[in-house]
Length: 87
Image (cartoon, rainbow, N blue to C red; front, side, top):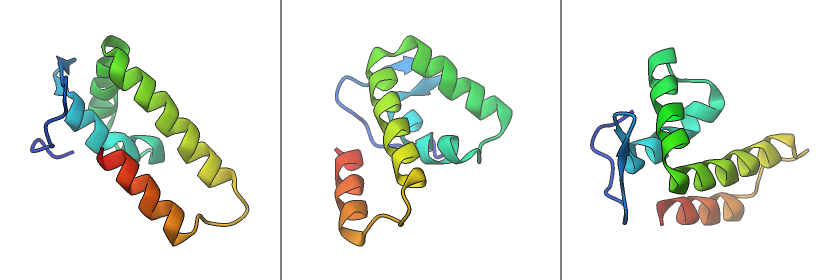
């Protein structure tokens, strides 16, 4: 996870991570690609940050839906999803 994450409006530091760092690590988190320490830090942040808790739940639902679909998402869907995540 990069420590040079973009600053987000209303960003907080909880559990040793800022919201932007959590956002930057969500894809790796959902794919199981993080070491146990980083995973625990993200989980601690999300437990203490209602903004990230809400976003993280929405993000996880979207990832599960994409993975469960019979076909991979279209390029258009991926572009729109990336745009939403960037905001």
